[in-house]
Length: 333
Image (tube, rainbow, N blue to C red; front, side, top):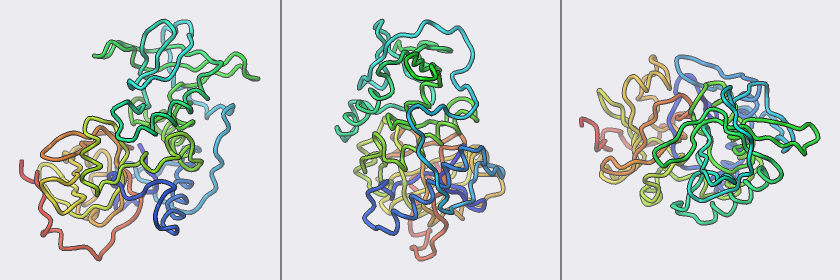
C-alpha cells in the first residue's frame, strides 16, 4: 500500500537508518522530510502510482500541510458498515488497546499502539498524551468487531465527537494515527490503509506524538535495537547490504549474518508488494522502510506480506562490499 518515496525500478522493504527528525546529518534529514511531504501529498489525493506493486516515484519537496485536529479526512468512511454499538468513553492503556468505559478493550484495525514492552518508555508517555488529545470529549463506537485471542474487541470503530462544531465522526484509527498515537498498519481495505498511511506521514512531518522521538523508528542496521523489538510492531529503516535467496528472498541489513536484521519474502509476496518484474538484486544498496512485527528467525526478522509494508526511500548505492561477501543466514532454509 505505500511508501515514503518509491522508484518503479526498485520498490523496497523497510529498513532503519533514518531517525525521523533526529538525523545526525542535517542534509539527510531535510531530504527525508521532503520525501515524506511528497508521499503525504500523493496519498492524500490518491495519487499512488501502481506498477505491479506499490511504488511511488516522486521525491520532490511538495508541501503537505499537517491536518488540524478538527479536519475531516477525505471521503472514504473507513469505519465501515456494521452493527454500530452506542459510543462510550475510551482512554489510553499501555496494553496495545484502548480501554473502554464498560471495561472492554478495543484494538482498532489499522493502527498498532505502543505497549509497555516498548524499549523506550518515553514512547508510551507521548502516545498517551496524543491519545488524550483525540479521545477527550469524544466517544468511541465499535462498528465491525470480533473478539481477538486476548478477549479484546478488534476491528473498525468510529470516533464520535458531538461537541465539535461539525459534530464530526471519523474512522478511529485514522484519527489516532494522525495525532501520532501509534503506527499505521496495512490492514483492511486498500484505500483505507492508504488513508491511514497518509495520516501517519502528516504526523511524522509535524512530529506529533511518537514522531517527536527518534526511537519511533528503529534502525535496521542496529542488531541490538532490532533484537529488543522482538514481538513488537515496529517501523524500521536502513540500507540493504545483501540480497539473496531462491524460493524466498532475503534482504540483509548487516554483515553479521547470524545476528543481523533480515526481511524475508516469498516470491509471491515480493511480486505482490514490489512487482513481478522487479529484480530483487536492484534493492542492494537501497534505503528502505519496513513495518510489521519483529520475529525471531535465527535473528530478528520481518516477513511482510501486504502492499505498503515495504517502501523504498532512496535508490541504489554502488559503493558497498560485494554482496557475495555478506551471506544470508536463511538463504536456503
